[in-house]
Length: 496
Image (cartoon, rainbow, N blue to C red; front, side, top):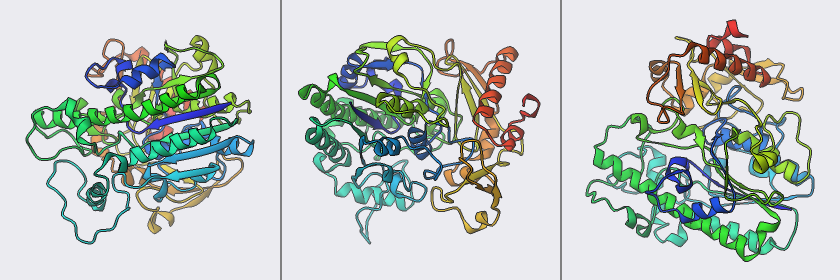
């Protein structure tokens, strides 16, 4: 048996034809939907980038106990388990956060890995003197400057990191298609911002815009003109079309080597991105609306032969690790909260009634696939939480000396396999990822019915539904062995 995961970053489901989008050119996503099962009710678990990747390894929620960080020594790593059981694992990626502080030790779980340089602020090429072009949005720090240096070395499409990363993945398939027992994770930073593409991909989305370059939205409320907003969205569309082109190369190789008969294919993302919806750009700065949390997922399982069908069962990122372990005939560790998707692929079997999702230090969210309930921290308690870690590093940069001075030893949790933890005071997960608590408080607690209000524009006042969601939120937090202060912070003591 073989398996391929093609993972994109910040891929919005509402920008894909299989999910009803008619204004993005993506024929290979249509083709993919014809050859796989399309999940209509897939949600992220922990956001953003590295918390989601930890879930892909561990099959359990990250966000209730800590922020962005590396794998912990007690973690059950899906690629590591495959590797230990004779399944060859290979990662090729241009996701530069793996090599920053807070991203360490993920790649070492694979038998082999490749890293393509140059995305966003990856400190790749060195230029002492460099004039940053005039632009809207984008970052004004060293990361922003580095992006434009990197672009200078990627003017030809063949030199762009997405092209080189897919080339690495295709080389692995070409070299190993006749072998058995391997897993390839072909992971791509695109269509994460900035939206840098060759002109050929922009051509179908020409909008007559004559203003300053704008292909890198910041994380803030929309202040740009409607023309600027539409242009930036078109730059995202162009990048999705580019992603689609390279996805097609994987599908072509699946056809060429008839890999459909014995190779699982998963196409997924970590989360979406706010492209002016709710008057926001980005992520982390607003409640986690469905544009961020409701994600696309496509799975082909050669054992079932099911393709061209849709599934309504509620699934999550945490289900990917157990799905792959079950596929390769390996036991699923007791600490994995996710469930294998085989029977859901076969018959739309329900594997859960509710799903939690969120980011450390902001709303805790729950959905039943129709209603979404976003529980806001109580006033003046938004930062009354701790980070529980063994590996004391985060992003951006390490946990500070002052923060480490607050650390005390904690006995650990049900899933830490007897390892004591460092409990570090304060919401450094909020600080380091830039979330403004004031904005969080302004939104408050929210309840939406996404069946009657798919755009989540009209919060509900429905006491019975809120109580039902609250009961199940507390139940799932207990199952996750959430720390006590999370209940206090969310004002849930009476529900415990």
